[in-house]
Amino acid sequence: VDTRRPWMHIERLFPNLVVDTIDGLADSARAAGSEVLEPARDRFHGQRQLLLRLPGGAVLNVSAPCAPDPDWMARVRRRADGGFVESS
Image (cartoon, rainbow, N blue to C red; front, side):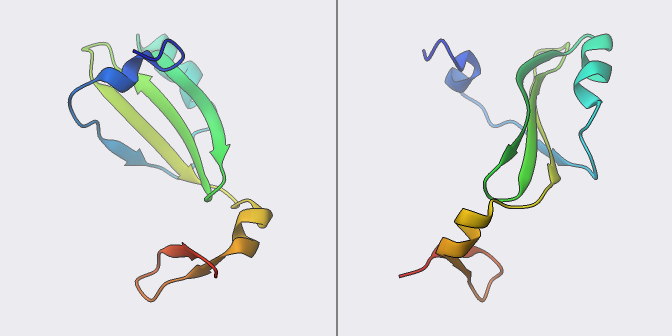
């Protein structure tokens, strides 16, 4: 088990909840008895992400849109299906 990410050994899927903003959500979640497994941070692909363990033990990934990293955007192109692929 990776001691930096002990939840990664979980053998089940965990849901992803997409919201408008996650700012302040960690404090509210802690107050409600949840554990913050990974604090909110901006991901290079344009998603701000927070990982929680809920009081019942379930793991929940909460994310909100944010600006993607400009260096990453310079290296990719949008596919017809809306996804991204590294430019060649």
